[in-house]
Image: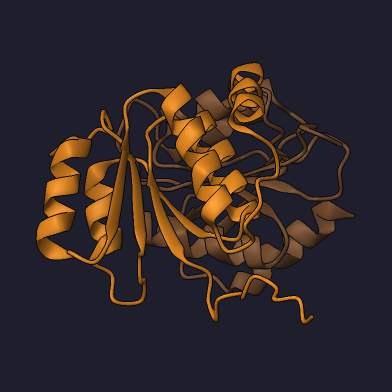
Length: 130
Length: 130
């Protein structure tokens, strides 16, 4: 094996890679930790700009989970729309305390109203893992 | 003669990794997790301070980019940590090469006492992914 590099999942591996975007570090840590314990790979971004840097890298991302209210030029709704348009194979979850049902018309986007039960998100991700 | 295995700690050492570069941070954080560290991630020194102050976390090591954004830079975070959490070990890095070297060294002395691969391969992986 030597120095063969295999720490990060490659596309096609079973682990599902989830990009968590939230400017609230506590919330981001809680969700990322939960996902890692559940066997997913979690990447962490504190705003849309960081998230897009990761999306444009070669790291595999299967699911985006984003908060809505974030600083920067793009909020979570705009990020979700951008990712759906440019990476249509990436599943998108928007989690917010507010009601954004009217703003999110894309039926492929899962809207979660905070506080939501973690089982709801984990169940959705398990479905994607199959 | 009885072979003494490296003792696994009751709980993994907690390492706070502070870097705004999401690709480098994601790859290095996962590398350190593979070495047995419990890694929490911060994208700025402000986030790092908030995480250090959390009573539910027990950070052993702060590993930070000197240019990390925030109210203070990495040097300022080191001073703040020494003042408020004097038992926490702080390691600063100024370049990606140095960051990869430190991560590999931390792996060598980490709970599993092994490196998945060396710093050159780690650095190469980050560059390939960008």
